Length: 90
Image 1 (cartoon, rainbow, N blue to C red):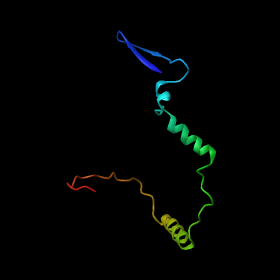
Image 2 (image 1 turned 135 degrees about the horizontal axis):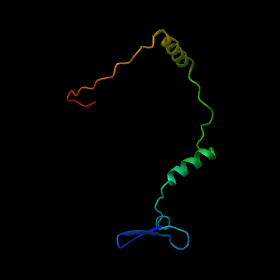
Image 3 (image 1 turned 120 degrees about the vertical axis):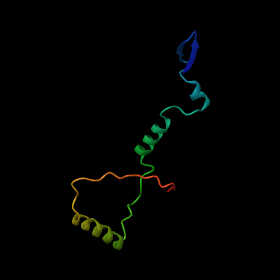
Image 4 (image 1 turned 90 degrees about the vertical axis):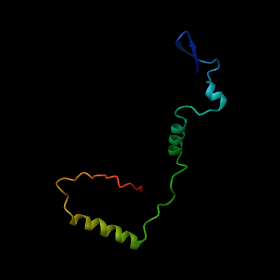
């Protein structure tokens, strides 16, 4: 599409041949990256091969941490964190 400004009005004219200035010049169009990501997902080309299981020791520790999380009661309310400027960055 080409935008033509005439007398304070904006008119949009299609370029003959169905293409746009950006497409003809090779510039990316709005939505090109989204369409590319969706096509990649749909094609399965970026899919993982066989899933890698956790080593036994790591899996045991993860499960133990999960089980122990039930020992803690869920508080009635959470106090809002207060951020105080200490003059340093982190």
